[in-house]
Image 1: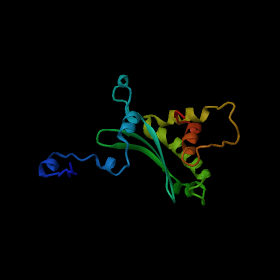
Image 2: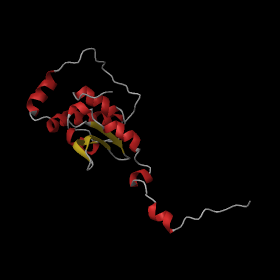
Image 3: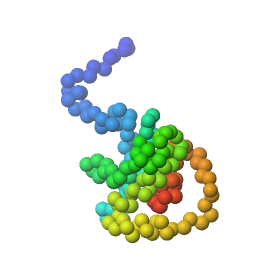
Image 4: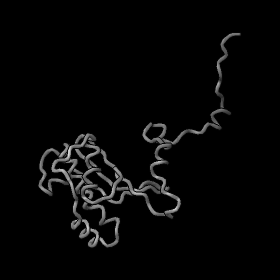
Length: 159
């Protein structure tokens, strides 16, 4: 028997359902995303915050976000291009800028998350860290450094 070509006719294309746009573009793995953003069922509408770090050619972006059905809500953000206000003039995409951006996010985050930022900030400044090394070397590079710095700055992050 010879080769028979399968003809996809009008009836086939009427029922064909395309995948989500971000799945078609290869940007989002929804299987992994579902496991990342789903909160425990016994926490009753409490948002599950996550820290997002993006490194571009000219900037480092750190955000705290939580997922909703309508889309992700950004609670607060810190950018490396804000660092010149704090005295860091050059090298806004290097390892040191990643450290500073993570620290900026750690100091900015509780103001938006908690209702009484004054009490939280005073508790954070009084907190002492024992057995902390003077130099922090990370194998994660520029992407992982803001997460470690945010933990050093007072944000509770599983790292």
